[in-house]
Length: 502
Image (tube, rainbow, N blue to C red):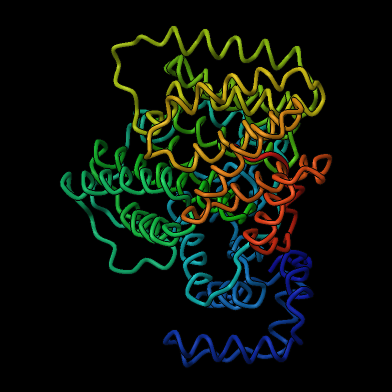
């Protein structure tokens, strides 16, 4: 007992709107449903959890996480409730104090448990038809400060410890472990192939339709990681976990679940580092940076992309550095920093052209090709054109090159290119060309489950106001109004929606 109030639990309890007696009855009922009929919680126990920081024994923390998740319609973990026992989340290096339960980075042995718990709660929200929008976005500066030194230190798996853990030994820290079992190389190879299938679907159709499947697969991998496999298999499993977590984050971002998406990006960075793949950890953080620009927080994006650059190590390929620079340039354009944007895009192009390495390109980088380079350049110039209208011509040129290079498998990216082109044409006072490209985008959006494409369409539609008397534009506006889904109600700090990422 800490004898100090549990402010996390108190805050969430206030949001839930229960009485202490009501929560006690719900805990007993839920515990019985989970096979613990002997549990007998009462009002006084609930009061001690909140007022004195008493941490109940298992399974009560897990039961509470389920109840609050259902009540609030977003993922609420044991850490969110402040119900982590001392030592479970690791300790700070050098001072012996327990970690803040929500702090990053968390201790290495916690990564699989955090992954499994969070995905389990996310799946429960899907099953119950709840929103799952999460609590609040963490500022990019907070994440980059917390993870700066951690990202540069070698993980336990690659550090060459003198007392390696025995293979195939179950880790009791795993949250809600079901029939998890050790796996062999064939199973890991099948998981790696499934990542490619999910990645291709996301690029073609958006994240909405497959998000639940990706989260479910990630949850299973978390169970597998509760066992300690031989190092070469363990490293590959961490790689699968990182890939799936990035996909889960990107798909969550694609459908507007912003804090949930950010949590997956952070989980992905942890998983990649556990597997010794610092460039992959950096790429996961770059996704979080793109998300921040989309939400109108370019300063946070620059903090995160700076961490991605510096924390990825010397093995980072020039093409990956080029991709990071395009995100940095987009953030600079969002702030109206034209000169900085142009310098950054110049560095990106030089790095992309210089990438003639014989080393195989990792699967997570294969989608960043020449078309994506031009697409991101178009997006940056189109964004800058809001401050410097002359940049619209450069946006049109880059978008045209991107569209010429796009393949049908990148349908969502083609939609973004059409919208970049249409927006640039409106800014350049060419409504006829703008209408043509906007219609092409609109025709493709019905089969794409990406909330981001609708966000971008809203941004473009704002530019049609000055052409409302133009017959073709007036008809286009009517068609957009009929096709537009109802705007989501932002929950918990989703932030202002800005121009979406390619």
